[in-house]
Image (cartoon, rainbow, N blue to C red):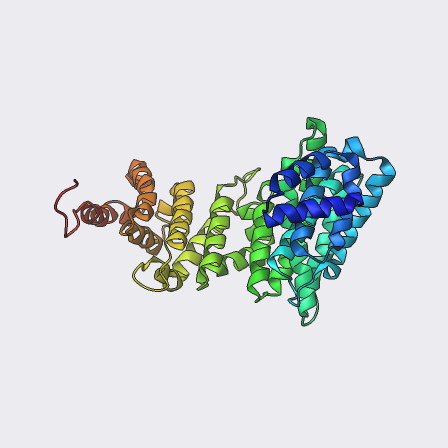
Length: 402
């Protein structure tokens, strides 16, 4: 038996969970530590079984992260680097499904291959730029006139590449000097990445997977210099695409959009930007405009009710209000309808949603009255008191806590 056949047999034994499970696990654990594990693991990428391929891709991911510099010479590194690029460039040859995007196992396999390529590109001279250029070329397929399903699938792979890169670089076990160099390269790549995302957002993609991919990509690059004021002033179509999620009836998309906006608001502008206030007011206006579309997620008695989505919506609004309390309460810019939305959140049951607003109310009453809009002087607290009293009432059927 060849080493490749031994490895495949052990993988199949692990997957089947039979009597050979412990023996197969022991073999794999010891084998993957060897330098010779690279070749047979890569060979299994051609295996027709999705589960075997995924297992092999996990082995390669572990190998490139832990043994790239110690078990391979330069020629071997280059060969594997080029092979991983070829897989990502031509993934269809590894897709055994009739579906364009492939099975969930195939997508998991491709995800591991991309992660491996992230690592290898980080180690290769100029590899990071090559990786980002390849991802952007794929994303650019969305800008074709009437992009085909193949174009869209190619772009989704490019977006996935962009999503995975910053996190993978952050997880690398490398020296401080190497990390600093990679982080600087990553920041330089932010401009072309955001420019491409802006172009694609301007084209107003309709496919849910594409919109989710774009938002996830932006979210992944938040710590590379992406700010609220920067998006508002330079990439407004991309910011608008996220805000449009607030008007979606798709709970997952709403949660994703709110999660991104919440994190975005918490990123400071350095140096401070004159566009920050305008951008925050744009977000507030987006929430107020989307009130009718957001309301069903808070109705837990209806089929549309979604506690997780309601929680994310409330959490995002509270974060905006708390981070920018001087702006949102100012006589000039206070949006009373936005405060009414926050009050409606305070009425919610289960109370974990309502409790999100409590810290903000405390911060509000600590803000000098002279600096606040008249609505926030007394009227809002009268309404809040009524809400809190109702929230504090025992259930109608209450008898005892015991």
